[in-house]
Image 1 (cartoon, rainbow, N blue to C red):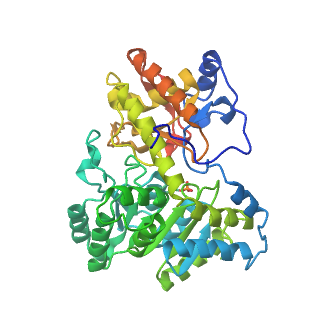
Image 2 (image 1 turned 90 degrees about the horizontal axis):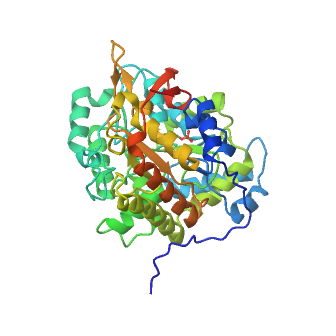
Amino acid sequence: MEFKTIIEPFRIKSVEQIQLSTAEQRQKFIREAHYNPFLLRSNQVIIDLLTDSGTSAMSADQWAAIMRGDESYAGAESWYRFESAVSDLTGMPFILPAHQGRAAERILYSIRGGKDKMFVSNTHFDTTRANIEFTGAMAMDIPVKESANFSSEERFKGNLDLKLLEDQILANGPENMGGVIVTVTNNSGGGQPVSFSNLKEVSRICRQHNVMLILDACRIAENAYFIREFEKGCEQYSYSEIARMMCDLCDAVIMSAKKDALVNMGGFLALRDKKLADECIQSLIITEGFTTYGGLSGRDMEAIAVGLKEVFNPDYLRYRVRSTGYLGDSLKKSGIPVMSPSGGHAVYIVASEFYSHIPVNQYPGQTLVCELYKAGGIRAVEVGSVMFGKYDEKGDLIPARYELVRLAIPRRVYTQSHIDYVIEVCDHVYKNRKEARGMKITYEPGFLRHFTSRFEPV
Ligand SMILES: *Cc1c(COP(=O)(O)O)cnc(C)c1O
């Protein structure tokens, strides 16, 4: 008999106190943070769903491995354990450690990018896009059409549009393609998975035209879970076998270890081509560190090596995806517009529908993150025109494709009752939605503006 209550397949060994607050206190905190939850202090937050990045709880085995950290400058034992774990996952011969994902991105894209180069992706993550555009290259998102249909239950909405991929390669010329990036799961596109057959087709097209295929593998274990559960012909493979088969289709793998490696800091770049690896290594040594640590301490590398194995535990993956789905399904039952079906690491609320009375240039997503904080101390992130909007020559907003708010679930951190609290708070905010007002930007920087922009209610 299978019971319906989702239990965490772990128990708690060490606890971290949450500082509770009143609605009056939070009103003041968010005003002082200029209505940008990125500017709150973490102890002003009750449930922190800002990101699943670097917020995982580590296991007793990871903490034990940390004690084994070999901090030698060169050739540390910890490096060899890290390299072996990354090599088991990716099968790539050249592995470059980096202090986080974007450092690996900067190294690769500063070499592959440059003026007149074009990158296409199912959806570029914000740091990916910024690193590409910073070199003068262009980054174009070509997800499948179903990715824009928030109510369809289609399972692989993270897929890349194969027709547009071929069109772009032919229109730009293969020699001007910096690369094709497949992000698994598709973080900015709603945390939706990519099917194995889609990746296989992308790979075939890239190989046919001699275009580099890069896997952004931040959430590869969660993506492998969806493939094994929902794609015909894949159920005979284990989750880690599926992950390896995905890497085998690509020329490079970039991973922020802050996601599916279950650690708080780290990343890597794995490459198949020696010439490119040599160029990247030069940049690595100048900016990150020597080839056997690349900005990571020995203990970080130990924790990653253990985390990369633990994340493929079937009980863990099943709990992870079910618990995220439980949050999404419960919100939907309350009538809240969420992206369907729920992805692996997050639930996305469709803020433009939630606050249908707030126009896009008044940032309904920013309003929602502030209301969730004021009501229940929940910190979420806007994934809409604050994050991805641009301006035309006249200074008018070119809005993002969607106005979403992401509730990202840290790995192994919150319990089922925390999730029930989140559901209750969202419900309350939804019932009072008519009273909410839009936001205007009072300060913004040029790049990645969602991190430091300031707002005021209109
Ligand atoms: C987090 C993330 C990155 C960047 O990694 P950092 O470790 O935050 O620098 C790149 N791509 C995707 C899909 C991500 O989720």
